[in-house]
Image (cartoon, rainbow, N blue to C red; front, side, top):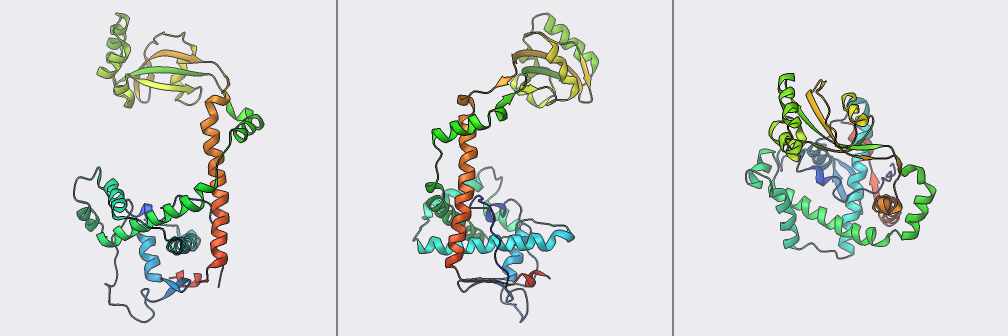
Length: 317
């Protein structure tokens, strides 16, 4: 038997979080039709005597919407089985720790999936070939794993202000910022339209208001605000704004997207972002690194207590 390859710290719903959004209808024999040697009875792994059948594996693999290239298929399937085994270990640990998920918690999570749906959740799932009760059990497992991970990983790691300062001092160049501009744009389809817009702007029409009325660009609803960007982060036609003084309006600029008129709102000189500006960014980076390390160690501890067997060859179907 092969051993389980550890994976890095990931969100607790790594596997099942994909199921709702990327499910495909399962095809194959119905329950109760298993034959000796079929996927429904062939075992690919056991965790403390609890089996993972090839049928369960293939069902989850298909429901996750994974379609690997032929050359990578066994590698991807092997990794997916490793994740399923880890999930089994975590669920057994959650039960051992007497972690509970109440019905209100379960219903609240299900409600998050209902929001934005145009039809009943059961109808949506049925259209995907998914049994509602089985899907609900998946969500319950997600919550169990999340609670366990919070208890065994998240609560054991923190980042101090001293650590943030040390990281900033050791990696100061990482926070160097190039010159940036904040600009607005109005984009129209023809040069004639652009000339009309430009004339209105010369007659003191508010740029943001006109962008909302005339622009075809995605940011039109925000008055054409492009936010801050550096040289090279936008198409070459946008570089004209770096040569403009603050408050200036450009002429008509043609691009593959249409005819543009720009207004420069602000310029931000090149420099280094302060510690205050990047504290949250550094905190989140260091916290994630610690979580990954702790999660890796914790899974290793679970493995030392678990009795498991893996038959990767059974995946070669």
